[in-house]
Amino acid sequence: MTTRPARPARLGDVASEAGVHVSTVSRVLNGSDDVSVRPETRTRILETARRLGYRPNAMGRGLKLATTGSLGLLVPSLRNPVNSPIVRGAFDRAWARGFVLVLAEDPGDDHAAEDAYGRLVHEGRIDGLLIQSARLGNPLLDDFAAGIVPCVFLDRRHPGSGRNVFMRDGDAGCLAAEHFLALGHERLALLGGPPELDTVSRRKAGFLERAGDTVAVEEAGLTERGGFEAMTRLVGGPKQPTAVFVANISQAVGALAALREAGLRVPEDISVLCHDDDPICEFLDPPLTAIEMPLVELGVAGVDALIGQIEGEPARDVVLETPPAIVERRSTAQAR
Image (cartoon, rainbow, N blue to C red; front, side, top):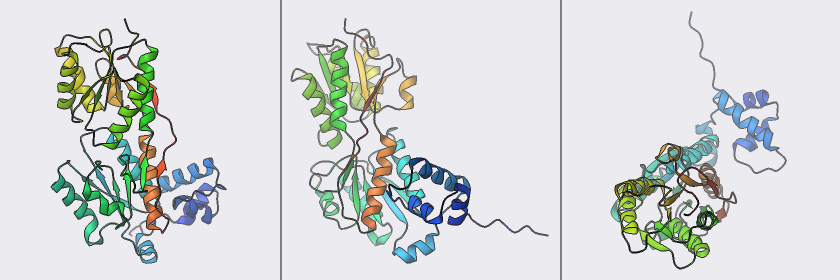
């Protein structure tokens, strides 16, 4: 005798297990912001759906909504560890709402970017696009900003598009400067990224707003090599800083290597703080003080905003109100 395989979990199964009405489950899994659903109920429903392996009926959903059930996400670098929680948040949220996520990398070259956009958008293979790789002044993005397809500029804003989902990067820059000033540092430096990146520009503006116009600034690519070379220039100048704010983790790895090569100790000679905390920061030498940002929440909010457009809602900007926070480790210390 053969055993008949168990049928897939249905909406009613989730409702029964969670102890709520089917309509409540439907609203939660479809991403409704219904305030009548308590946060603990929403959490219980999502956990129950995940445990039971509930999946929306993609065929029925597609016939009803005339959608492909796929969203595109264009990321600037698959090597950057900071992108992982953003992708995870977007993937989980898309899955919970009945969509799959198609991932593509934009290596920064204009022609490669154009190919990436085209592959995701042309031929109707996706319902909407999350663009995390936007660079200020890139004319390629203007068509997307005009709404030729539902899209969201994620993390990096496209000015005037009215479809940006982003974090408080300016506040992160202010927080970094305040951290150094509270430790008594006066000779501050900023190891920044390419100025055409919106996130980098906002962090720089926030840092300079608090730290003043005497800050030494070096700009480089958001890579280990970029961080190494920029830090080498900073410490080789006539006025060596005592504290440096670094744009991202990849740069920070290179910056720490440059300081070791120069015979400088962290934090005894120079304090180092980097933007975007990651588990790897705890295991660097020394463990790296970093700014924690709501990266998973960013991915979730981006998907919700994009699905809203797909379902007919007007595009709008979304600012995540979760504030940045300092995760203190051993790479920053009182000025000597």
